[in-house]
Image 1 (tube, helix red, strand yellow):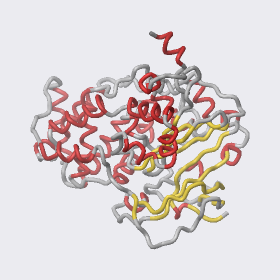
Image 2: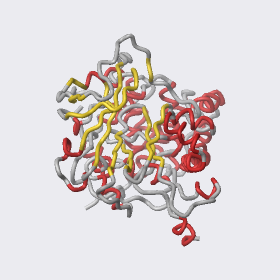
Image 3: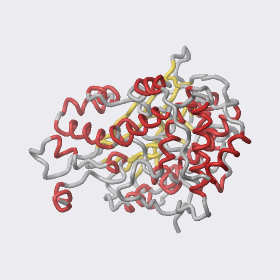
Length: 209
Length: 226
């Protein structure tokens, strides 16, 4: 059985939409919010700030060992070199995956997530199933994303309970020698930066095209 | 608070069900509610810890079924009412109006100073680190136990680590203390640590946790030497 969010109760979506409009009307009339501000900020997270930024940082780390060292030592400062940072990622910590260690990030108490490199979180990250299981059944969670690791690989779970924001530096896939940063970034998915999967293999990408 | 929001390690909550090619926003109103967060915070309705605490006040059955932004809406109405920004009867009357007129949008008005503030805020964010004269009680490598007791108000002392023994793997300096800030009692900064727990300590020999460790960030008052 899964916990669905299909709003089978009649009119639930309509009620929420109406209540948000009512609250918005109050805030607009009181001069506490602007329609232009709503358009501006929602557009930033829809069009500018998203997982493509985390992918860009990752690709840079894969081709530039000095940058990677700086990223692992102080992710906030290293991301700032690329003009990346800000709200809900004021202090970021990057966790490196290797042959022996795989990292995965969760927020069991709410939905803390590194917005500057991943944008707004997907629903599954915010819902009870992932939040309850990631700390206790990380191998089962990854298996649901089609990703299985041998038991010899240590899994490190990071529960984001404070204002530090964790994200994962995936391993560079095999068969990517000579790839440009742009080609490498195309292999870095949101899910691989959360740690529920690895980065894509170049074969998988070619097969999709 | 030992509430239903404290989900780490609970059973029976189902499959993850990731949505393929999920959009950033599923409904138009999600755009509005996203921006109500900074708008209401700037208006002084809540701080970040109060906002989280407000979501924890949602009745448990509703909490588990509601979507993420419904949690936000609940907290915004709670604190907006407390701050005198929202009159619940007025909100109800307006909600009924929009239910009966679903094609009607909320009124529009520009607020260029808020756009300017957001242009500044989004790339910089807020700062939760604070200076303190108090020396850190624990060092990296120390063994600590998470104190078992918990308040009935907001805390980040997650249930699944309470009473458990772990190792300090990072000492971060002092940060705003959520347990105090959520009550409006001031920032009361305390040292923050990342503590590592073995799966054996938390879950015994459960196969899903084989060869795994869990890290969580914990403030000094949550801990004792072990």
